[in-house]
Amino acid sequence: MIIDRHPFTVNSHGHLEIGGVDALSLAHDFGTPLYVYDVSLIRRNARSFVDTFKELGVNAKVAYASKAFSSIAMLQVIQQEGLCLDVVSEGELYTAVEAGFPSERIHMHGNNKSRQELQMAIEQNIGCIVLDNFYEIELLGDLLDQQNKEMDVLMRVTPGVNSKTHQYIMTGNEDSKFGFNLKNGQADKAFQLLKKYPSIRFKGLHCHIGSQIFETDRFLSATEILFAELAKWKRNDNYIPEVLNLGGGFGIRYTSEDEPIPYEQYVYALVEEVRKQSEEMDIPLPEIWMEPGRAIVGNTGVTLYTIGSMKSIPGIREYISVDGGMTDNLRPALYGAKYEAVIANKADQTPVKEVSVAGKCCESGDMLIWDLPVPEVQTNDVLAVFSTGAYGYSMASHYNRFAKPAVVFVENKEAKLVVKRESYQDVVKNDLSYL
Image 1: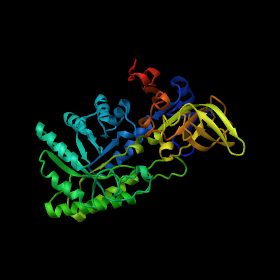
Image 2: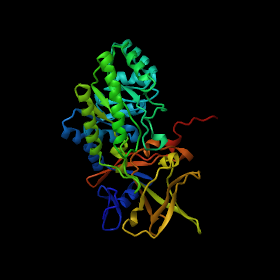
Image 3: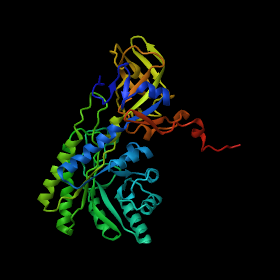
Image 4: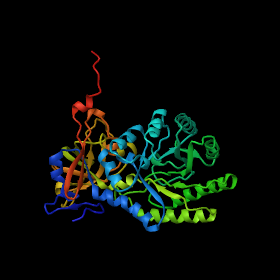
């Protein structure tokens, strides 16, 4: 039995299976809350991008956006699959170094890179820095000149495309904290400024229009706008781009309301558009880069919880409470994200009612799911929430002094602990006494 439109199965005991391992045994062996990743699905998602570019015979780089979920084990899997890596902070870069990730395949993003972060990127000889503002151009140029080094860069621009997504994950519109604006001439000024720094090797443009996008038309519009700018630079300065980075943001399925398209479809559409625009501009096809993050890990993760208290308000609502909440999944409280779930030990049973799933944080807004269809529920049942692979652990906090959950990877019917569960000693380890 397959869980409706989620890539997991139900075994003969009626229990949810993740990567061929019974979810109940995972909860028993590793405790809850527990993040579980099906590594075979991570690999399959990664290959859907990489293999499609190969099939089309296009020079390309697929970089995993590690902000979705970064750990040493995760980056090792990404390295095995031949992807590049996006980092947005010194901490993410440090994790990549600890994972042994090849530095030439690391790209650095961020809207406020510090001197220390840029210095670390230079020292590690990473493959590319995506410049986001004038301050960074001057800072990076000065640092490179001081050390007699060079660095490949892309310029992040905002093409003025409003994506059909939540305002908190919309990044390609004009009013954005990210990148150089095309319409008001900031990108032109940045292009001229880059000429003053021969140590900065300007390879091309980057844009990212937002996240959780289910169609290709906005990506195509952004690509057309980028080429219009590039055509102007070619006419005026004979500039020919080597790289065009079209970002990520490809949508995944969280609930039945979401209708994602195959990842290959994004690649086909964007390659066709870049080819068309390159031919019209009469330039060689630039290397195409993409940056999937959520699309690689989002649907591969399941969070397991143990159900505790239950509360019925006749004529209004029935609540069940779990041993986690907004500390391990902030997305519902942050921007109303929706999820689907099953009772893992009753995954083959027909729902008979609806309940709302409450977290245990001391906040009324700590609700994971509203109106979830379930069979009869009991204390100590295990709840499995789907599509929690992206931005769960990454956004996890110590609010209410909760310890962060463990992370387990499952592959070939074997489970391996890859991030230890925090102890309360871990929670207070940086505290200092005042007495």
